Length: 220
Length: 182
Image 1: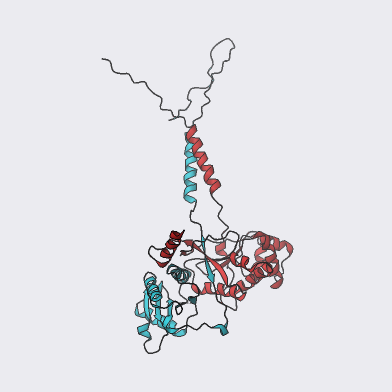
Image 2 (image 1 turned 180 degrees about the vertical axis):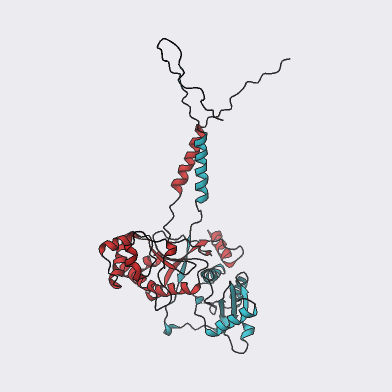
């Protein structure tokens, strides 16, 4: 009996289909990925059991672990007004052109006295070279001035809207007094409600909140 | 695997002026393209952070000296945040004589049960947690303790952040020295 002759098959596979799938997935991931909101510096926020999502267009006060403070004015429409307001109230002496240039910056991280000289520079130094907004104590707390300008611009509008917009994003290792000084700046401007950016964390099993959440779910 | 067209393209057939080009295959080797595609996918999958930041609400009281909240001593528990993630606490009011007995030290892991015990032992109307942070406490500590309140389902208005008194600072310092911290 002769050996059954196996027909020699080609090892070539049609790659077209696979290629299609790969690029389909790729385009899906690119489109589905939301652009990260601008960040002055990367900080590691603490975790909390809060499940509310952080609002998108917001005023973010970033506190780094070195205690430096940066401000991001998220709402582009109001940004220029805020800068104009602080220019007049604090007498920074910026021209319209300089204000426009100032508005183009994604974050503010220098003492008020250095704004004019910083704007004259060709390129902004990176965030870690900046001094940050001084918040040392109640006498030298420029955050108070910034928040005042923000409240001035948002005055007349709904106070609740502004309250919802203010976010404090602090690093895990930031010291408490720096956080206290930011709170002081907000309280000085009659802002008693604000939010803190955290990473979500699951509610520990068996804790009071866990039991309460479960009861709520069961009721539904 | 896909093959490469290695035959010399456009071979000439010798003939009297007849140029007959060889029919070339229109198939392109797609392997590198697939490789690239999957490489990019992997890159995007890994760099995308799935976790969305959440926001925690904070309500600060007005600093009004006329509206000082009176707290019942029986329902008050003061939590102090020290350096190196240390937590100290005492019940009621700190008295000069037996401060050292009242003043207890713990950590973030165990404070939950202490808070819960206090909550269960006290009528809700009298319950008050007073949180005080030392200058060496971190932002994480301050948020963690507020989170602890949320985990133990302490209703808002039953905990407050207050500045630390010099006596308490002194006590923390002494305890830290005794515990060999710093």
